[in-house]
Length: 272
Image (cartoon, rainbow, N blue to C red; front, side):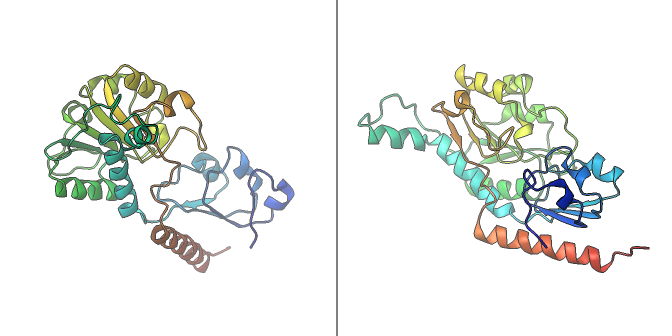
C-alpha cells in the first residue's frame, strides 16, 4: 500500500498497483498509467471522478460507495438557503463596517414558500423532510417516478427556492443554463450542493447581476479549486469549498465503505 499524488508520482511507479482508491478527481489520461490495475474505488457516491470509457477499455472495475452524507449535505443545503435568504454575510459585514442596514433588502421568510428539488435521491428526500418541517411547499422534479412530481420546467416556474440534487451521469451539458434561469420566478434563490457541472456559472452570474435572482448558494463549482471572482464577489452569492459532506461522521462512514468494498472485491476476485 502506498500514498500516491496522481499529479506527481512517476508513471513507472503507477504501473505497479492493482488497486487504486480515490478521494479526488483522477486527471484525464492518468488511468492509462495503471496497466496492472483491476479495481478503482471512489470515495464518493457519484463516480464521475473517473473516465469510465477508459476504465472499460482496460477492464478496470470502477466502484463508488453508498450514499454516506445525505444528512450532512441536506443540512448544508439549508445552511446556504438561510445564509442567502437572510443575507447573513452582507448583514454581518454591514455591522462590522458600521453600515447597519445600508444596502440590505428585506429578508425572505421560508414558511409558506415553494421549495423546488431537482433530483430526488437520498439527499433530495432528506431536503424535502427539512423543508416540510419548516412549513415549506415541496415541488419535485426527478428522473425516477415519485408521487406528486412535476416537470423540471414546472418546478422552475413555481419555486421560490430551487435546489439541485441531480446526478451528472447522463448530462453532458449543464442542467441549468440561461433558458432554465429565465423560467425561474423573479427574485428566486438557486442552491447547488450536487455537482458544479450542473450549472452554467456565466449564465448564473448574469441572472444575479440583472436582479432576476435574489441570490445563490454554491458548494460545488465547475472546476475545483475554482476561483471566479466576478461571480463569487457578488454580495448575493454565498460560496463554500465543496464541504457539504465534510463532517466527521460522514468521513468515517465513507472511509469504512471504501475499504470494505475493496476488501470484498479482492476476496471474490479470481485471477483465472
